[in-house]
Length: 628
Ligand SMILES: [Ca+2]
Image (cartoon, rainbow, N blue to C red; front, side, top):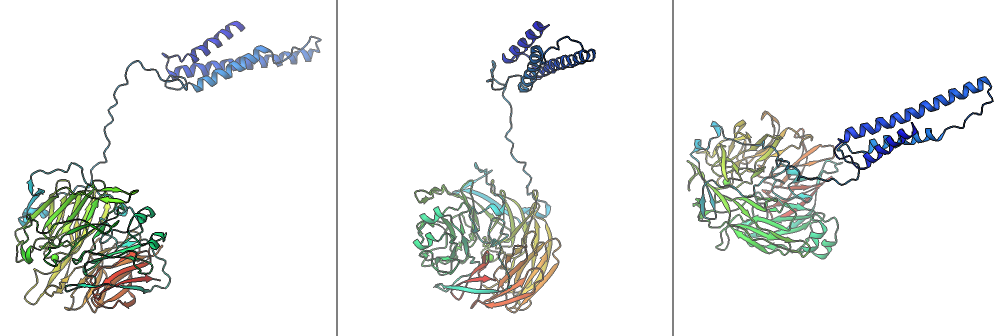
C-alpha cells in the first residue's frame, strides 16, 4: 500500500513538472487537486481510526502500549496531498506550468485585428431646403492655383472638444475656441457684484483707424516656463511665475503684450504697420506663433494674413493679398483677413476664411525646437475653395468671409457677406449644405453640441443689402441644425442701418455655459433698434427662440457680450456699447447691476480670464477691468 501511494505521488509530480504538454491544463489541474484531496482524506481516515483504536484501548484499560501518533505514513499522506493540491492550483489553465517559456512548433495563426476606428456619427448632409443649388452656388476647389476635382486630404483633419482646443490656460482665438462658445477662461470669486477699471494702456492710430476696432478681442495666455524662457519677454516677466500675458492686435498696426495684473508691458510691441480689426489667434499647441490678419490696406500694401513668431516678433509668413483666384473686385479687390483662424494641431494645418471669398487651408510644416528656442514654418501651397452664388456681385452681396468659422470634427461652419451660411467638409473642401440668412453676415456663429450626432449653430446677419429706402428692415436671429442645415427657429427684429456702420447683429452670440444660471440661453446684442442710435441685448431660449429677457440700451452695441461665472455657476454678463459704457448684468434675469464708463466707443469684444476682463476702445485705450 505504502509503495503504491509513493509511486503514484512521484509519478504525478513528475508528470506535473515535465509540463505534461499534451494534457490540457484544466484537466491536469483537476486531476492533481482531486488526487491531493484523496490523499488528505486517507490521512484523515487514518487519524480517525487511530483515535477510535486509542479510545477502545483506554476503555478496556488494556496494557497494550498505545502507538505514537502521528505515524510517518500519515505525515507523508498529508504532505503529499497538500503538495498535489498546490501544484494543481499553480498549473496555468493554458496547459503550461507557471514560469515555463511557451514552446511553439508552428508559427501562431495571424489574428485578424481590424483597426478599431471610432464610428463616424457626426455626418452633415444636405436636404432639399439646404441644397446649394437653391441659390445657384458654384463651388470650386484649388490646390495652389490649380483647380482640382475630387480632392481628398491625405492627412484627414479632425478637431476635438472645444475645451481641449488650446493646450495652455487662456483664450487663444476670437470667442475662445473652435466652437466659438466662450471668450471666458476660468471662474471668478465674486462678492460685491461690481466691476472696476484697474488699469489702462494707451494705444495709437494709423490713418483713420484709432485704438481697437471690431472685432478686436484680446488673446490671453498663461505660458509655461520653458516657452517664456525662449521668448523675447522682459527678464522680470520671464521670472514672474504666474504671469498671464494679454496679446492685443489693434487698429494702429501694433501687437501689444501686457501683464494681465497691471497692464505693464511684458515685451516690446510688434509694429506690423497695417491695421488689425480682428483678434487673430494663438497656436493651439502652445507654440509661440500668432496668426493675425490686417483689415485694411496701408501705404500701397493690400491687407493679408500674417504668421508671427512670438520668440522674436518677426513676421514668418504673409499671404492672401491679390490672390488671382479671388472673384472679389469691389473696394479694389478687397482682401482683408478679419476672421480669427484655427489650426488643426494634428495635421499642422492653418484654416483661414478670407474676405476675398476664398477659404484657405495651409499645411504649415512647422519646425519647433523648444530646447533650442527656434521655430520656423515652411508652408505648402494652400488648398482652398471658392464660391459663387446667383446673387454675389461686385456691387451687391459681395463675396467674402468677414466672420470667424466654427470647426466640428472635419466640418467648418461659416457665414459670408452675401448672407449665405455654409457647411464645408475640410477633408474634401466640398460644400455640404448651404442656408440663406438673407443679409450680410459678420457674426461669428456659436456652435452647440448636444450629442455625438447632433449640433446646432446660432447666427444672425447685419442689415445691409435688404434695407429699404429709409434704411430700415428686418433681420433674424437663427438656430440652424448643423447636420441638415434646416432652420429650426428664426426670430425677426426690425432695425435701422447706417452706411458703413451697420445695424442688426455685428456681434457674436454668447451661449450660456451648461450647468450655469444662463444654461439654455443664447444672448445677442442687436444694433440700431428700435431707433437708429439705440440697441438691445436679448437672451433667447435655445430650444424655442422665446425671448427670456431684454435689456434696452440707449446706445447700440457691436461688441459681443461675455460672461463671468462664479464657482457655483452663477453668470454675470458684461456688455459694452457704442458710448463706452460697460453694463454688468445678472445673467439669469437681465437686471442691470452696475454701469461703468470706459471712455469712449467700444466696438471690440472683451475676453475674460478668471476675474479680469480686457477690452480696447476706439479712444485708444486698452482697459483692464476687475470683477469683485
Ligand atoms: Ca460683411
